Structures are given as C-alpha cells and as structure tokens.
Amino acid sequence: MTVLAAVAVGVLAGLGTLLVVAGLRHNPVLPRPSTRPATRAAAGAVEPGRDLGWLVAAGVAALLVLAVTGWLVVAAAAGVGVWSSRGLTEGRRRDVSAVARTEAIAVWTEQIRDNMAAAAGLEQALLASAAHAPGAIAPEISRFCSRLERMPLLDALDELGRDLDHPCADMVVVALANAVRLEARELGPLLSRLAVFIRADVRMRLRIEVGRARIRTSARIVIATTVATGVFLYVFSPNLLAAYDSFAGQAWLVVVLATFAAGLRLLASMATVTYPARFRARRGAFQPGATS
View 1 (cartoon, rainbow, N blue to C red):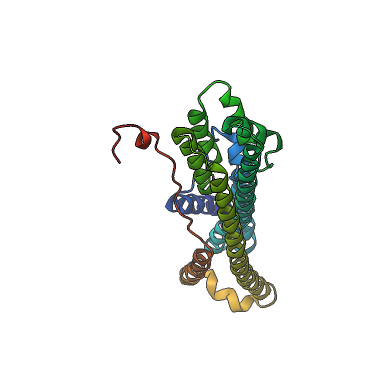
View 2: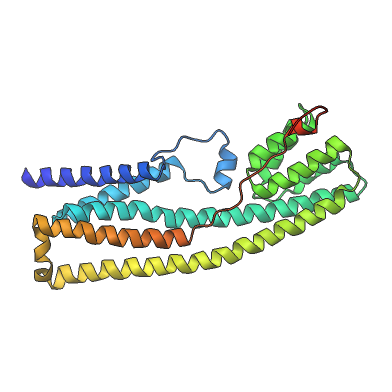
C-alpha cells in the first residue's frame, strides 16, 4: 500500500507540475477545436488528441522513473521533460508548414498575375487560380471561390485573408482589395513585385531554420548526454547517488534540475524568432469621410 501511495503521489505531482508549467506559459493542455479545421491543420497546429497523447506519455514517464528510483523530484522532472519535448517536434512541423505556405502564396500570386495577363478580369483570374492552387493553400482558395458565388468580391477577399492567416497573404489581399476599390490598372507589376518579396521571405525563413536546427541539435546533445550520464551512474555506481535519497538530497536535486531547465530555456529562446505582426486592410479607411 505504501508503494502504491508513493506511486500515486508521484503521478499526481508530475501531472500537477505539467499543468503549472502549461499555465505559466499560457498554453492550453487540451486546446479547443478551431472553427476552421482545414486552415488549422495546414498551419501545423497541435491537435487536442496529440496533446493528450503527450500528456499520457509524460505521466507514464514520471511513473516509471518514480518506480525505479523512488525520487519524486526526478520523476516530476521526467514528466516535464517528456511534455516539453513535444515542442521540438511540433515546432519543427510548424516551421516546415509555414515555409510551405509562404511559398504557396508566392506561387498563387504569380498565377493571378499570369491569368490577368491573358486578358482576364480580376475576378475571373481569381476563379481560374483555384483550379491549380498550390496544395498548401488549396482549401482556403477553394472556399474563397465558393464565397464569390454568394458575396461581393471585397467581402470574399476579407474572408480569404482571415482563412490564410499569414502576413504575406495579407499584402496580396490588400493589393487585390485596393485594385477593386480604386480600379487600379497596373496590378500585374505590383503582383510581380509582391511575388519576388514573398520568395525572399521564404529564403529568409530557410536561413533562419538552418540556424534554429543547429540550436535544437545542441540542446538534444546536452539532454542526451546528461540523461545517459545519470543512468550510467545509477546503474553502475549507485553509491555515488545515495546522498540524494534524503530530503536534503532531493532539495539539492531541485536546485540542479532548475539550473538545467533554465539553461535549456535559454537555448530555446535563442531558437525563437519573432515575425512581424499581421496587418489587414481596413475597408473604412478607403470610404469617403473616413478618418485614420
């Protein structure tokens, strides 16, 4: 009964620590489903079921470590470590998806330009682009064309900007909306310049990703080396770790693990890139009498 109680306490401690960490980082443990499932999946967002799987894996890891070592501190650290490692895989998936979507927006912009060069109006060019829209944004373009059948072009463009949810897409949508409002005749050259700019953004993201990959690799090496050293000492030299069986030893483990976690947090912050905030056209700003 004592062993079961200790295991239960360890599991609850690990899960409680995970919830505290998630709360401090303002990350929902089980995010609510998005009202735009296609856009959410394309953007590489974490699905609720996947988060639940990571949560279960973290609890199992904490339980196993507690059963083997009997150290509550290390068990809680194991659970937090497994939960935090999901950021490495999900972050990489989001980065790859973001690059693919940015490239797709550039291709779509060029398609609109080419369709307009074939003596097609703007609305016809937009409808024609849906037939060969890049896969990364094809669902959004398809919904946009469906909306054109029941709402004005400006309203459909506004909804398209919401669906794409991308800074580069905002610029294209603004250019198209301005062309509709102001009846611009030189839209083709503007779209060409936007496509060049967006492709430059893709190259920048790829260069950034290379640097972030090096930092992730360094973090993995540090974590693997530390864990391997701890396991080696526990298996082959348990006497060296006997001091950590006491309450004072567990307290020192908290200090050591907190220092280690702070170092990993610094490594993660080095790999974080803040992109410019999105902007969207304000329709009122183009109406007579509107003030900025």
